[in-house]
Image (cartoon, each protein chain N blue to C red):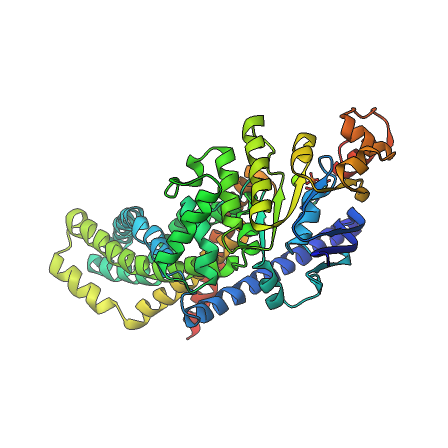
Length: 263
Length: 262
Ligand SMILES: Nc1ncnc2c1ncn2[C@@H]1O[C@H](COP(=O)(O)OP(=O)(O)O)[C@@H](O)[C@H]1O
Ligand SMILES: [Mg+2]
């Protein structure tokens, strides 16, 4: 019993220490993001743009495909119930609202976490193992400023941008199955969709996706800096990175969903 | 002459495992100072303290008479610009070309024109015998060439002191000899204070002005090679003669206690 209490206590302490370390990392990153551009050539715009292409543009094919399929799936699932009431035209409402408020941001974030969050961990972890991080420090180059700040900016812009496209594609997928499988008329589908979307849904989704981007980046970076002991350590943290990121995405999702439920 | 580096009663531990215990030494300007010791004797740890990558538990490190261990971060940055470090695995940034690696400190710390940086980079690469390899990625170079590129990068800001961690480890004897020669050339051309960590006696005989032997986290002896060869310290004699340990001796036990292997 005492052993259990001790173990739980230690676990809580560990997590608390991690939160503390991540907070320091967050503050550092944001400070550099603001300070570096002011000091002239401090911010590495080109590196940030390259990262944006990697996180955003290169994620489009997979995110696009999955979003389309999910759109198709929700429409069919919705029809399963709505058909009984002869209310198939409301498929459009359901697809639009769930895509905007929930599914497009969530799927995009999970896919980008899997593709890029882990890649960030692997990159930084490998650099740590190869003493490249130490080398930067000895040269008087701050690793947060040099490595993390550009990635952070790229991630918090790429995730919402890709999410916006995913929303569109998901609605398109819903339309495709509603029109070609269920037999709803295009005109009705479009009118229903336009009627269903309110500004707040879009805003909700975009705000969520911004925080998903922040979560993905910081988990990736933090796990990368945690790497200890060779290639094996990189592998371990990379796996941990994806799991932590997805877990955190769900938690953030929950918090915002509850928040928007009351607001 | 005033020593350029002074280490006083340095004590360093990982957790509660004391790795360096009461190190005292000083490095004179312009000399090649070799830190010699077996694997796990704490050579890298000492070097990491000297360049400020680690903070010691106790003791002081003076660089040019200024206390490196207790100064502000900004001051430490200033001092670091007068130092260059070559890592054991060369630690070149894998995503940058050789030229960009060498240019990195110049781009970050100076306001020089890109064309000037370009020329300076070329000069540094020529210096280490890598002229013409500007656009190669580190992964496209051999181990010895990577080490040379690492030296070029360490030299980019024209440091007053350069630190080498095991410059010839893992290289064939011919390439290793080439690096020894390069270390010597750097020292004589620029009157560059050089601190070299190694465990290879062949190297030491070629490059060292003075040698410090580390053993069990302490300094077993400091002096010129001749002085140390005449030393009656048992470990130094054993090291210089390349005699193996008897299993079961205090030394073997010590190594085991550090590495936690039973
Ligand atoms: N990050 C670390 N954490 C814990 N112990 C370490 C760490 N780095 C080195 N050590 C231990 O400190 C001792 C000295 O290591 P090191 O300075 O790398 O020796 P050397 O460079 O002479 O081979 C070794 O026993 C090693 O196991
Ligand atoms: Mg070492």
